[in-house]
Image 1 (cartoon, helix red, strand yellow):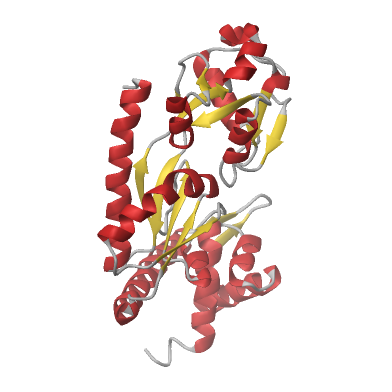
Image 2 (cartoon, rainbow, N blue to C red):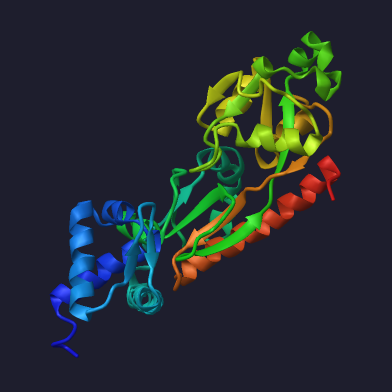
Length: 316
């Protein structure tokens, strides 16, 4: 076995696994920090060594052959087992602070005010929160040294453990002053594209107007000029603009509930659309005991918030 699994063969297998996961040589190369040509050549050498093709190379994409699919499955299971074992072996270092990558607006508005309670419950666990919203996979988390993350997105983490701990509702909101200055907003039919405040990156890979378009479909409102209005790259920036009386923002309930309760923002029509995205706790398989404690705390806080939200919004 030692002679079979040479350094060259292990390198070929690593390139093949990344290419098989992405079905794309270019994306695999970006993950491995090598050139696209290098990945293609490594996979070709593996195919020559096996004397059989692992991919069908079509003009649009790579398609795994049955043999390639079989090898991809074995490698995925093997790499996850290796990573789980390495995590277990590194447990003596668990006292190091946990790096938590978190969607920026959620971190600022929802998570940070609750962290005091976490540290009181877990004084032995250090937690460092980083505001980020890039897409995640196992390789990136390991490369960046990120033990866990919170992401607002539709989910889909084939090589990570992901726990959907809080759903979300979309609610158009504006300041009382803006509503008073625009009496036509008494009904959704008075809405105009120029009034809209957009978060154009609600999650990595989302369309620029994803949230407004989703709410408009749910409400049955036709707004041909929905792409107009101000654009921001964070939900909280759009909400701040609404608080300043600059227009109508698409609020996520987790980020605006206190503003609604205080009267700083107005829930314009009581039409709450369920979001296709939700808050996920994401970590690698074989998580440490401390990461499991963070997950359990977030799940409990999410459940408590959801109960309070239902009382305020009277959602099902």
